[in-house]
Length: 214
Image (tube, rainbow, N blue to C red):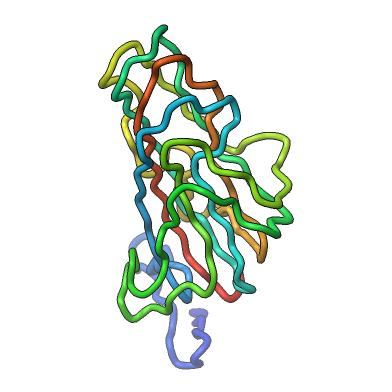
């Protein structure tokens, strides 16, 4: 006797392939309030100390924010006096009571970066990227270890790390994304100090969804 599986509406019936006896399914994105991406470029940064924050993202909303992808890049515009490593890491921030300051605030209002115009506008988020100096830390507690790192080499102008969409964090279906509750977030910081003379542009990309529950 065949077994039928009804959907939540009490009408839809799951289909089974007659040959391979496999259930037919359709993969869909998670149910969200808002689904967005952003890409940002710093000013020409120089003299960044080790562990200096260059990008900051804070969830101020009571809704959850699921982070699916985070990627960075760096391009040297003026060579360092001595060739060096350029490296960055993503660190989760808990108890994020006061946003980082300085830099350039990134607008996440209206339809900026929405994957679909009809989706809701994110409730309350703060995102910013460095201009020429590191951001000023707000009130937050950083995890002891980063959850993603990327490194490159800069021996001359034009060298560094090619910007990417997901070289620090990448979520694929079936994996658990980074989920931020209210007053949680993350920063991206330089791991190695920028040596003398060096100047460059830092790039940050991310994709995220605001959800009522997860």
